[in-house]
Image 1 (cartoon, rainbow, N blue to C red):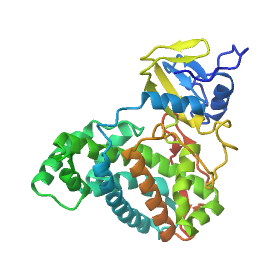
Image 2: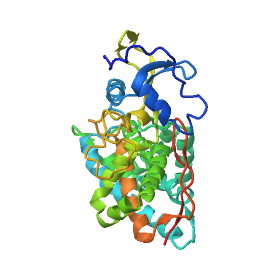
Image 3: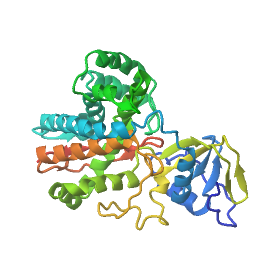
Length: 360
């Protein structure tokens, strides 16, 4: 795979991702990398940094995981969205109405941190108390949508066995009934597919939801458009993922050799895909720092290169849409608390840690 060549005449080394100040504001570094160092070794991180949109997309495509383990498959996908939407709507309205009468609310602690895990758990028909375990595991496990937390299999196996014996109306029971080429899915296959859905309800979705709410609250006119025209919400969500991805840095191990100018990386090299930089590449997006729900093609890379069904992306999109609609219905005057502005932070995982709002 051949990536775009760096400009000639640039020999100075850029600061690395772990340099002081980068975690607070990585965008000046991203700009310098895109312009002068599209492929550079970060010795402290132990990885090659790739920062341009076209290059990041190509590397994500070349290093993407095989779909067999987590893709529900065409026989399952029609079951996933309705069950998730029903659960996400119910949980979102419960959470929104619970806090709507308060004078001031932190939407991170009271809403975005809980909704994704609770919705995925409810859709699968697991006990509600498992939401806290799923949320905690996702805080310490894989952040990016490709990773499935190892604890999920142990959580799900006994529930799969019970659904085989006494099926219900939940999504886990539906997955147990699915037949592919006339054969029922094995317990391992059902567990893998359900675990992928729980991963979609994990930390990355919670972080992305916090940034999504912050972007809309920072742009009240666009927030009101989303209220009046709910059909705009999916585009608003995609635009937020482009501008403020929850996983700005995604490490990958190259499965094929990568070359850039005179630099050749052998298969097995660790490459850090700077999604946070790619989403603001001016060669791909006009006025890339601007948040615009009418952007024609946000084309974010949060869940990997486009072109394949990803359960985590499905869960995240449904949770974001249902969550925003519930908040707007429960809080007609939703706005920032006086004097408050969000402060995103984090390098490998990034989002505001506090969202103080007034409901009316």
